[in-house]
Image 1 (cartoon, rainbow, N blue to C red):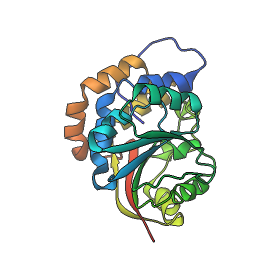
Image 2 (cartoon, rainbow, N blue to C red):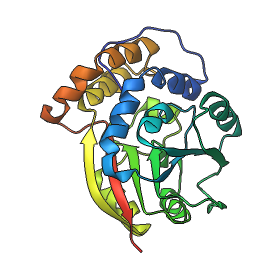
Image 3 (cartoon, rainbow, N blue to C red):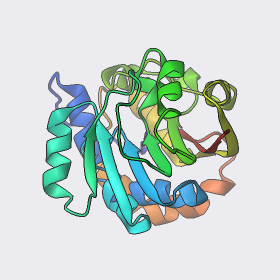
Image 4 (cartoon, rainbow, N blue to C red):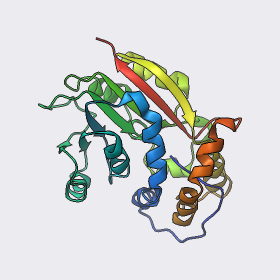
Length: 239
């Protein structure tokens, strides 16, 4: 989840979720930042769970030599299979159901997926059933008190705090090696855009400016004295 304080007065239609995904695709540097923060959580054969339109795949490909993509949306999968020729493979999988996967994977990357699923505990347990899975990275939207109309438009059931995310991960059999909050400037933008101005999307112009400011945003993130817009957890499967 990403936001910025500069505001966009664009007119929107009703397909807000698709619009927001397209807006977020503008910020390739944000995807690169999240993958860099994932660090030791990714190794070997990696599967991105819920790849969507492929916003994270280029950044993941810079770190991974054997990269796969999965999603429950066949249109998205066909798109990334066509556009991302470096992928080792794609897998059609709805994580509300146990994986029917023959391939074995060492680690997973799952960014902004759990909040879309009503029974997130079951989904996390299904991720734990990926054959041979050892480690992974989970990224979710943080701070439930800023849940807003943009969250609703994206199909979010909730936002998370460290305690609620830890409970879900622990219940699925994962040990949390590291958990951190990031994108603190994004929190300000989210509050202004969605709560104060009550906008329905992030705004494509906002996202272009956000992407241009990314080097500065990354440098100051650790010094900003309030929670970030996202939570990232690096986890290890308990055998």
